Length: 287
Image (spheres, rainbow, N blue to C red):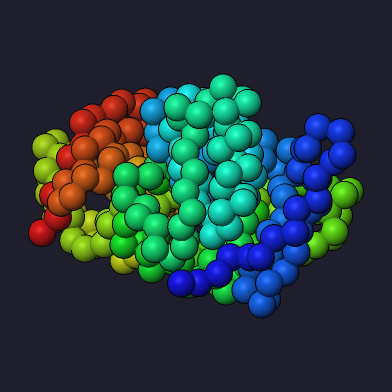
């Protein structure tokens, strides 16, 4: 079983609250460090859990992320930590906050935690631990699930979707005096060849999409010839393709926008010739 940390708790004498920067190292695997309230606030802002969406916090410490998600958003959450004392502290904090029905905590190895069903995963781990978790995230999380990490990214291979940085004067570990918060949205599988039928506007459209995590490259063709794909975006299940080209002797701008679900995309096509615009339904099927 992998160890997260052997923890030294610094408790305030008057009230037993966990000190803001209580931390200790065990064998150098991962330290226990308390995230300041403003960092927790920004992490939840990026994760944007909805009521009923399940959140899992890996290395939950005193439970503050799971508790705040339950209080603010009504999100049921599970916090896992290797240290039984921290788990008991988190349970007590949840009871005091009145959210013990939503905020659950267990003594568990994060590498053995089942992530299936979670829509948000939060973490404050070391870079090498994040990278070891990467295959598990893609194996168990569904498209559209959000992963939020404090301070450390997933390495150069999986680039983040969003990042924010804030000054935290009391932060004494990691990048001192500041925190970075990273967001990734689990991408749908959009790779392959997709075919659409758009009567009266090119007829049969063929899209060929290559994908590396959420980064996609696309080509678009119609029977009359190739089109130029000027922009692409894949965020969770949503795909967008900006395509320009000439049809029926007139230049057109096309914005394809849809939801990838298995071997089908459902959405809309917005057309503009510079003077007029209209919107058509758009569906595509993977060949």
